Length: 239
Length: 176
Image (cartoon, rainbow over all chains, first blue to last red):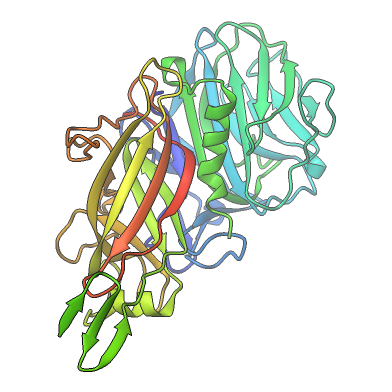
């Protein structure tokens, strides 16, 4: 198992008061990249230690206001269709009153997020010919469990094998919650944004704990144990 | 004072039981590859008092005692058996006074945890000083197929009985 290419980690033990953030360094393996937001009104707020009762006292988080908060990577990360993808999002206090975008590729408009009600996932392949898929997770049609995202600490994992349109999604327990053919043949992503798509569409409303984007040989293995171990990293954040 | 084994001592004619230290939890709260922030939670009043006795409390202050950390690399996908290593760390205040969280580091004096994450992601699983039961490098790095880890820790302070062991199992760690 390798290292995420790019990563937005909200962990910062020195944040004691709520603070607007930009220029957050990516912890990924490629280059010295930062997560930026030039408009101070659109900067997510780093929550101070102890300011969220759902989180353990050592944990901090990045609050996205559900209006215009987002962060953009200083240089987009190309996710090739011929490579495996493995993306991990951990968050808390999700507001499920509307669709919520987690990650976005602004060049052609691909995105992934949580559907309104927390009952599914929204995904649009990064292709001008594609349209949004709404993928239900609150049934077992293409999964092992029925799952609805709520306001506690949650994890969404997106996994795709090389050269395939099939996307698999897993939750904090490492369970497969959806599998779908995205019908976006050959489309790569140029991942560059977390928390919004386009001009303030489907803004994320919640507190991000971590977003990790692996590709190619650095992807974690797809075993129950490995998936559960990833979820366990974030279960510790629960108070 | 005449010591009578590990559990009791005699002061004059009074037999006193040594206080056993107590840990509540261990958490792996942040990682940068195999550089891991290990935080212990202490809620027991006697233990908190023992840790900070004589200490000027502040974030990053080195407190009394040591922590013995045992890490197990499951290596679930490879052909190797589990690898287990143990190493002793110093203990530091994670936040200011009156708090319950402490983190582990090999540093020997007060350190700053702002700015450089390396100061709190201070448990490096790749170092050869994590020793196996034979006293050799336990090879705990996450390269290849090592990715799922267990962490066990207890603390020791002179004049007290070692604490209970607290455990967190099956945590994912990235390789560099």
